[in-house]
Length: 241
Image (cartoon, rainbow, N blue to C red; front, top):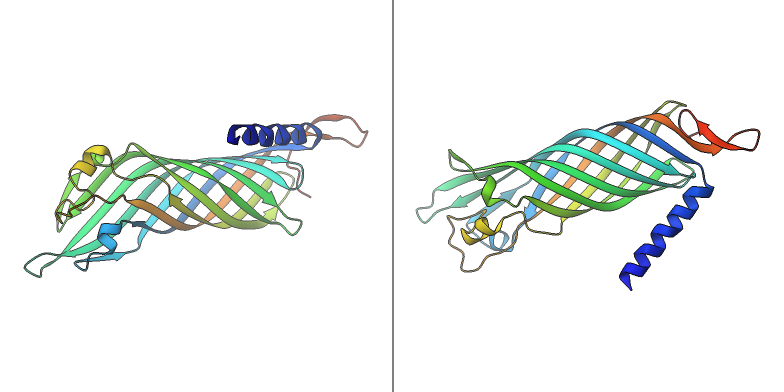
């Protein structure tokens, strides 16, 4: 039933695209914001104090706009995530734990545009971890094998147009993300990461989340639209007025 509903939605979008104006934009994107994670063991443990971290991303975006109100954004961003918390050991000493992972993030987002220039976006994100390191106190260690090769998230955002022209479009927005799968690999789970020092009785998944502001600058490649003479053909630029 779910596959049939998905196929019907894809076919409906495809049929709409055939009849509507379809525009392609290519450009760059940067994002910065707060990040953290949910881990039941750590959040319920009085020995731990968590803090929000910082995540930055930069990369490329392809925007396919279908008609005036619908669009698909495909984004590939290189990201760096920082997360910090503290742990008080049996002697009462407070130890800083820092987590950092670098990733390639792929977004596949549906956008719903309004006449006033605002839009909503929703879709999946896949994070491929390239490198990870973690510290306990002042001791840093490379822990890429303790972290998952990839994890999946759901992303939701709101945004709007800053400026538009026949060639250049600038958009900005606020995006929230929450991981649907674990940050930690099977090997890391067996060793109790991200807190192997705490000796918890049971393992708890680590689900990263993020809230960030972004700026998106795209150039109108062109699209298929109806010209003044009534025939459909390729037109340079964007479909924005």
